[in-house]
Image 1: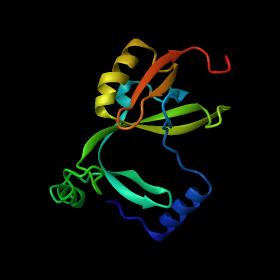
Image 2: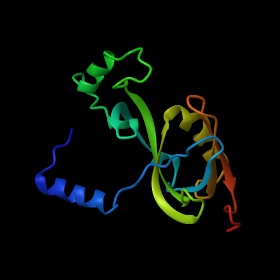
Image 3: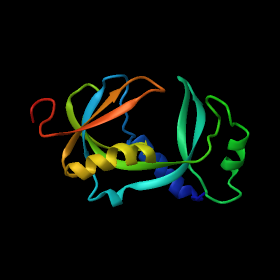
Length: 169
């Protein structure tokens, strides 16, 4: 875990309040879709991290956040995860490997063309079974439509290479 000093903390808080952070990309609901461009030169640029999923309480209910595993034998989150095996929504999960892909999302939540940067977090299994074959077949620098099908826990994402956006651009 990296320690920061008081000045770094103030800078981080200022950046959060002014919106200088990169949001996560996700699709809500069955049938939702968007067009993205992957900000990668090759598949080797994809970041892979071992993370724990931490359950947090918010004003609208529980939500989950990914936290890097220290990878050390004395990782406090690894020790705590053992106490939550078998739970449907554990406070701390065991480690899993995720890929983090920078993207430009082309449309905002209202369906208007309004590109913005985001990070798409997916499992390494999704990368191996879906993204890697897509990148082997299509130019990684092209535009792709991502479509969500199903509801949790049975959600699938389909990826299609596209030449035009929703408005024909």
